[in-house]
Amino acid sequence: MATANQQEETFSKRSIDAMRYYFPTIMVAISVLLLWEFLVVIFDIQQFLLPKPSVILGKFMEEVDLFLDPDSSSLLFNATRATFYEALGGFIIGCGSGILLALITARWTVLTEAMMPFAIAANSVPIIAFAPIMNNWFGITNPFSKMAIVAIIVFFPTMINTVRGLTLVDERQLELMHSYAATPFKILFSLRIPNALPYIFSALRVASPLSLIGAVVAEFFGGPRATLGVFITQEASAFDFARAWTAILMASLIGISFYIVVLIAERLAMPWYHEQQNL
Image 1: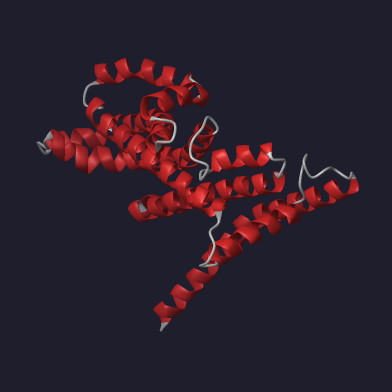
Image 2: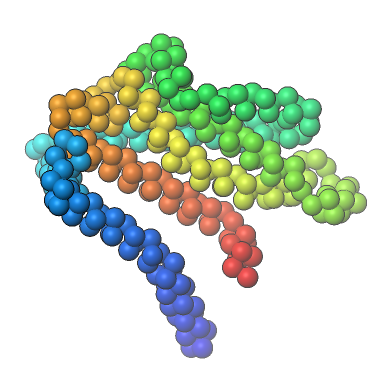
């Protein structure tokens, strides 16, 4: 009974701490939306310049009704699904390749140093420079052209962070492993990879919203209408800015959800790390 009571007290304490942590963020978000609503009304801002949040929410709910209706189809949700697959595919390809290459290059310092100039050069190139090239390579309507752009964006940050985590190992721990005659593979899986996990998930947290940004920006340069980037462009061209803002809202929701999934995966993969952080 005492153990159950302690668990309930611990859960209650964590819930209160979580509410205290997120309460300022929620209040700021609500305040910004209310201020936005009132300023549009007070200054009589035209809808084509800046729609009210209530109007955007109304358009969004119309799309939700279409999505839930089995006899109709929502173009916004179809576009959201297509963009999500592009972002997810690019995220998996780019981050997976970055981690794999980091495992290879971290073994040889010379190879790591040789890759750094390419990483810096790739990160300094804007997204819009890659879009026309990838569209020409894979086809403007091919989802892989957008995945390739996303993969390029997230590849090098993931690789650099993973290499840092694999190489910045405590020398005393490394000497202890050598004293036990541990093989390089044993050192890799028992010491280097666990040490690199916080760095890897730090890169994945950054890459999760970047992947969606890359997919949407790439779609501005062309693609099927059932994608968020094309949807935003066409609705803005038709001066239906409320619907364009609903697509922006959907992109934001996907980005936030993507980030939360990475956070959950991080906590499941590294419970020991978060327990140390809370001490």
